[in-house]
Length: 247
Image (cartoon, rainbow, N blue to C red; front, side, top):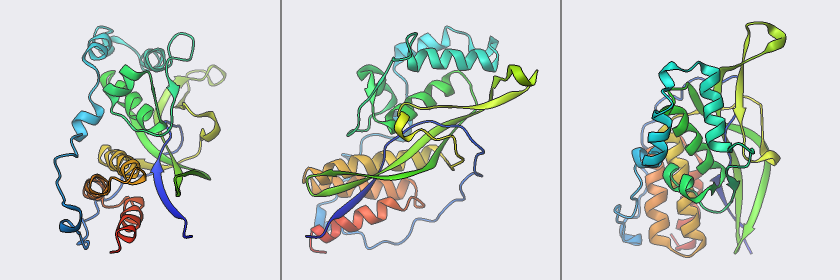
């Protein structure tokens, strides 16, 4: 039996020399099969703004800290206290489903993409310079119901955010990571908010495909490609969907 592999973006936050901003890629003229899947874009309800929107109570809490009066180090400490908690275990890692920043905050858990989105959104609220990125990691496969999910690792880089005592007034870059087994301090590919949105859509689509919801999978794979035409995994995953439908 042929093994079907889906690429999903699962992990979080990083440090490293950052790649340059991705160049804009034109949307390709793909052989869309809207009729075959009864295409309806309405179920793709999460916009980029919604993905990164914080829970209102959390937004107020961060605003009350008056981030404009804080140093970069103080903002970093505030961010870590928010996402990790005083005991370092504020959120738990939970694979299998990607959520928006607000949903992740309320659930107190999430996969690495979800936790990355939340941390980046908190950084934005604290007016911190942060860069989401995709970093190279060992290839890992997760077998679910005849599908092989290929895990990819995304993280967030904070430039020169922590003072290094050994270097006097020097500062170093910082990464935060919720998944120790995939943590990486290596440089990666800089990801825009649209690129992360595409990975979110791709993950939701892969989940629908694994559960036999072809129409929803198609709508979200298409949304992923339209959000970031440079994200290759969505094309391969769409091809899996087409093949399974006999196209």
